[in-house]
Image (cartoon, rainbow, N blue to C red; front, side, top):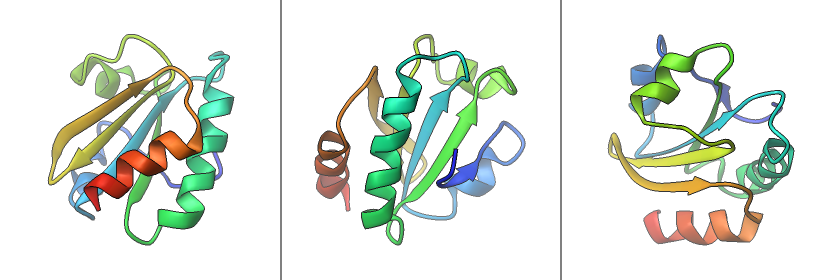
Length: 106
């Protein structure tokens, strides 16, 4: 992952409190669709990275965070506003879909 910060159960609260909007990508190396979502997130990060925190969580390294939010399918992206989950995107999606969702929140 070349964008955002790595997040796990240890630094979750700190990352969540850094901005009003936080996007967390739950992924794993074996996940086929995760590469496509990563490209979409990188694209949107280039345009909105100054207004939104982008983070990613490898569920193979820390399954506790994924379990906390009931993540059962990958890829899954949670969008938090003011510390609460506002939107969940599961499966692959285009950068435009994510960007449209985020513009509604910023």
